[in-house]
Length: 314
Ligand SMILES: Cc1cc2nc3c(=O)[nH]c(=O)nc-3n(C[C@H](O)[C@H](O)[C@H](O)COP(=O)(O)OP(=O)(O)OC[C@H]3O[C@@H](n4cnc5c(N)ncnc54)[C@H](O)[C@@H]3O)c2cc1C
Image 1 (spheres, rainbow, N blue to C red):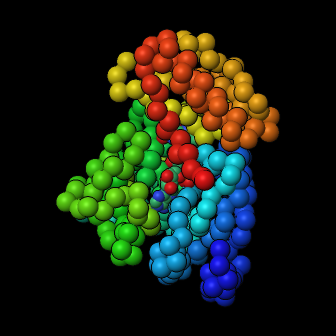
Image 2: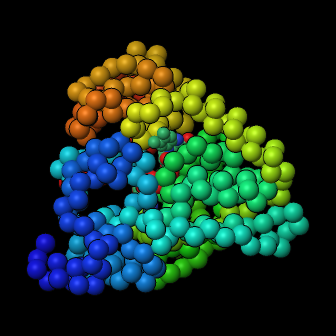
C-alpha cells in the first residue's frame, strides 16, 4: 500500500481501520492470513466513500458479514476487507398493506439471529427456518441461506444495495433472481450482485402467536444441536447438495469420509458435510481435506462436489 492510501485511511477513517489484520478473528473457521486493510464503516456515507476510494486507487475489495461461510487462505487478502456490523445493525418493523402481515427491515450488518429473535418477540412468523443460522443479514441474503424448510428468497420483499457504480438502489423481490444458496442476478440489469454491497433487506412476515413461535424456535434449535457438531469452528455445510439424488453429506458419509483428518482439520464425525477446525488447523489443511473429499466422492459416485463455502484470499 502506498503512503497516500495510508494517509487517506488513517486521516479519514481513523480507528475503524486496521492494517495487516489476521482474518482468523473474523471467520467462524478461525483460520486465515492477514488482510492488507480491514475496515468497519459505521455509516452508509463512510461505506460509500470507502468503496469509491478503493475504486479510484484500484484496491481489490471484499465485503463480509459474520464470516460464517467464508474460508480465508493462509496468505491472507490483498486489498481491503469491509466488515459490516456496528452502524449497519438497525432492525425496524413497518406496516404491510396486506392484512395480518408486517414488514421487518433489517440492515445488512444485523445478526440473522437477532432478526429471528426480533420477529419472534413481535409475534411474526416466517423466519423460523433461519433459527440457528449464524452470520449477518447481508451474508444470508447473498447466500440465500436456508434449510429444507425455507430460505431467504421466500420471505424477502426488497433489497437495497450499493451497486458497482456507487449508486444506492432498491429492488423489489420480483427483480431478484435467487438460486440454491446464492443471489444469482437482477432481472433487467447487467449488475452482478457479487460486485454490489447489500445494505438492507425487507422481509414479509405474518402475525402469529409469540409463545407458539418461541416453542417452535426451541424445537428447531434443539434439532440443529443434535445433527451438527457443536463447539468446533466450522462454516456449516462445506459442499452444496447436488441438484438431485443424495445430499453431499450422504455421499461423503457413504464414501467413508466421516472422521478423516488432515492436519488440524477433520470431517465431522457428527455430520459428514461439516469440515471442522479440530486442532489449530490452517486454511491449507481445510483445503487439502476439501480436495480429498471431492476426489473420494468422485471416485465412488462420479459426482464432483462443489463448495458452498466461499474460498477467498491470495
Ligand atoms: C454452525 C453453522 C451452521 C450453519 N448453518 C447453515 C444453514 O443451516 N443454512 C445455510 O444456508 N447456511 C448455514 N451456515 C452458513 C452461513 O452461516 C450462512 O451462509 C450465512 O448466511 C452467511 O452469513 P455471513 O454474514 O457469515 O456471510 P459471510 O461469510 O461474511 O459472507 C458470505 C458471502 O456473502 C458476501 N457478503 C456478505 N455480506 C455481504 C453484503 N452486505 N453485501 C454483499 N455481499 C456480502 C461475502 O462477500 C461472501 O461472498 C452455517 C454456518 C455455520 C458456521
